[in-house]
Image (cartoon, rainbow, N blue to C red):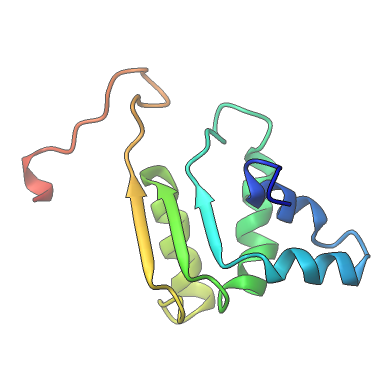
Length: 116
């Protein structure tokens, strides 16, 4: 599992295939989730939907480290509010990354003066 990048896509692919032992191995590895790869301009968007609908509820208690693009923030907050009463209980490390370019326009993101 460590050789496949991004790992979260492998986990999404393994869940619900019917092999309980393989699923358990994959779920046990989900202490650190990295969602910083470019999933919006690739074929991975359906797997990301599956991550939030099927996988996150099964691993939310295991997640200790979470790294995500700012574009994932609304989905992650929505998931946490809906499924976990607004918290991920074992989360100790959170890193939010800005994309270099906007997905729609190709121009760099700007934070603006009101976010500080």
